[in-house]
Length: 145
Image (cartoon, rainbow, N blue to C red; front, side):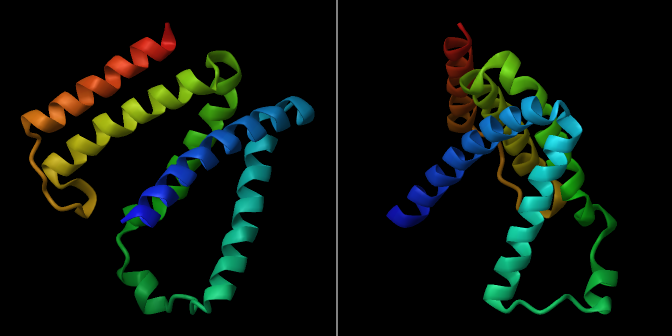
């Protein structure tokens, strides 16, 4: 279990690095939109290389047709995240932005889990989870001060 935990921490670090790099690129390019475009273009190239390295086949037309329409919208939300991060990290600072990001993710996560939205297994909100959410929000308040 140690390796997955460390990889999750590394993913968190990569988000901070990504946002700092995108914010700097925004300044260099004088454009939040082009900074986000570059971020996605590089990410697309990396995912193509990963798919090739893993030898993942291109999904068939029948698989594509069976996929719910809303499953294709992840990139939209990624673009919203990247765009907002590019604009907000320089204003709020990395720590405050990430703290608010995590608080938002946690609030949405427990809600989605509770109701089983978007195909997730239902996991009811219980007192322990509520305490965890409250502690995260408390952490946001402390970091923001």
